[in-house]
Image (cartoon, rainbow, N blue to C red; front, top):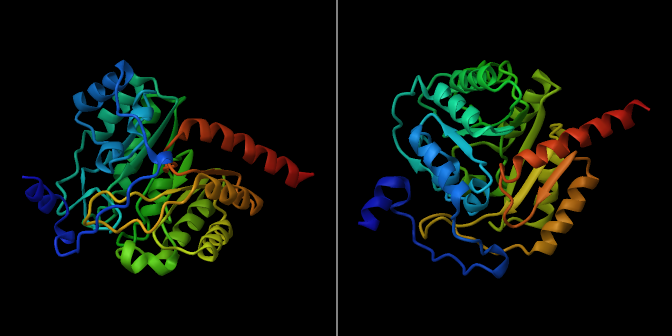
Length: 317
């Protein structure tokens, strides 16, 4: 049964040689999800028939985040048109868009009283605009129901979409535009074959050009075989694209068929990389083994606002 489920979820990985994941070190152990708030969050999400990246990507922080009524909503279904070697989201032919999904998400955000919400999606290369208008409709629906809630979006690269896709999203005025660079250029063909490194950099740069007031953000996974020099080069490239906020976390292999973990980066190494990234000019950096794009997103957004204000004040003097 498990093998059949795996074939259905990741058909593109069936001919991939299975590699048993490395044993996790002590600093990556997390508590199993539990508690009343966790259960209420779970019930609300299930009741509204919503999808979260917390579940689909098997995020290790789901217990902590849902126990604080934090969740990252994944729109446009749970099936992705791409098959990245690191990702646990199912690959295949997606269903048609759910017209009422933006309204259901807005209702859930209002009922949960969220001050900050993160919206992401699967890749939808089957749509002319890559789902950009669906993103925009979701943002507008949340704004109508919860005008005080800040909204962070984590988008695909829109590489196969029409040229107006990014502008459609930016016109909906997110507070944070996030697109993950994921890994270093030398690993893209193996890890992220459907994407292009410089295409992702250009997307981040264009987002800032379209609306300089919107904070831009990107994330990097470590432990996939990258070198220290390559990590530092990615930081420089992201700063050249005027990215404000960088997240750096440990890659975890979802199944034996996924890209293998080459090594576990220690907490001390993450701390050192955070210091380096801050010295390069990022307004906000979050680096730790368990850091993910939306981990502590609300608290980090508050700190990001303060940091950007301080940088603007210093540059005007």
